[in-house]
Amino acid sequence: QVQLVESGGGSVQAGGSLRLSCVASKRVVSVADLGWYRQAPGGQREMVAFITSEGRRNYADSVKDRFIISRDNAKATVYLQMNSLKPDDTAVYYCAAGTSRGATMSVLGWGQGIQVTVSS
Image (cartoon, rainbow, N blue to C red; front, side):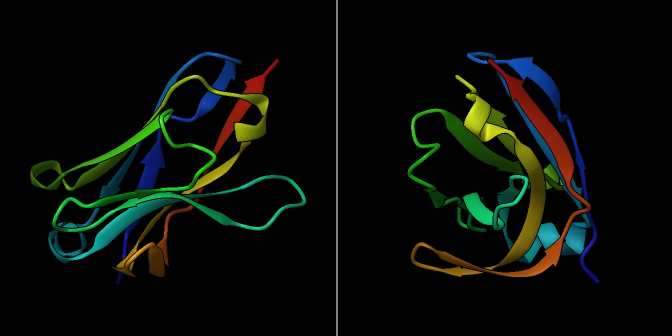
């Protein structure tokens, strides 16, 4: 069973920063690729970034050069540092665990989601 628990969301003004954290079960974090997805109101869930178990990173074009994904296997945690936030980044953000091939991630489990709101 995949267990993922997000924290760190909230409200921020445009141009600000937030850091999301997701704690996974140790069994998951030792073998899985980990990522972040988001879903805006009325929109589809989309991949934001993922990091493989070997440390390879992949980002959506919309967040490249602004967001940084990292993982700490010892703490069983994956992070998403979000800088230069824009109102378009407003969404519910979901932590995900799964496998990846190239730029595609196949998700096997989701966190409960956490709200990020960016005001102009």
